[in-house]
Image (cartoon, rainbow, N blue to C red; front, side, top):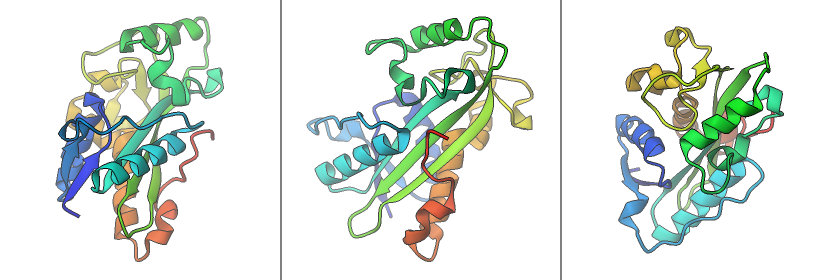
Length: 213
């Protein structure tokens, strides 16, 4: 595989995906190279469904293999919310800061701060089975935003991984975040799936794409 369309307009996601893809010899092409392509719908009930719909849409529209990502933050005390609505948690036009404020308001006084970031990846390539994997990073929600890096809920999310040492995703160096993030783990699972003897075993190569568990 040489060129892969990374089916996202989120610059933060693209910045995380491109270096990892380059490490395995893939040249990433962004959606900005195809300005006339209609935007894919994202109306599935879970992360995996959205990733699948986007990958199928953009592969058909561009003729390139398409790698689509859908990711979200799942907070235990909120029944898994914001989940698939993470980017629109505070409304359809909300920015990252508004989403963070709503999350903190929803958790006001709540002691159970357990959460996880989940990332569903779907790769669609002509003549090959669809590959779907899930990566997750367990952690907790902090009480106040910390750090200037990352995007989205990164200033609130403190991963369990010892490498983080109590820092939020936004406080980590980019290379450290790439090592332990949900997206990095999903990409590792994707690579194992592609290297498997049969792509029919793709879902077994990583966590199954079930955003509701």
